[in-house]
Image 1 (spheres, rainbow, N blue to C red):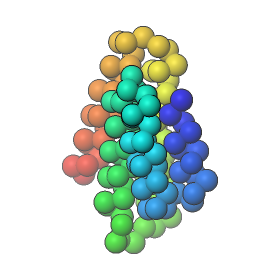
Image 2 (image 1 turned 90 degrees about the horizontal axis):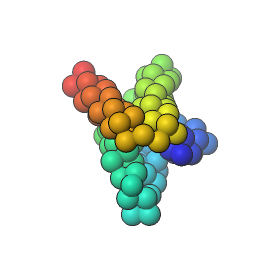
Image 3 (image 1 turned 90 degrees about the vertical axis):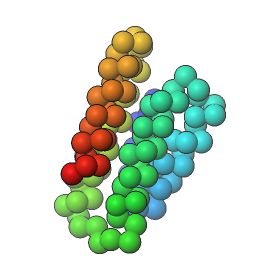
Length: 107
């Protein structure tokens, strides 16, 4: 469901502009998928955080790989919960991803 955003990110090379496009794509889906708005917003926020961190900064291959791994984990957590379908699983995933994004933003 949300993994298409990671696929697009990979297809575009995983650089700053790819994350920017991913953030835009996630925000654009919110209007058509209001039932997924919170998850899409978190994905957009995480992608935009990458853009803000690396837009005018050097990005090493190691850092790019770590960021992609982390971003993919966020999306996978949300995908798994949405595949489960229960409201409890979705809420738990949203809280888990939000907590992880917050932790990475402060480090």
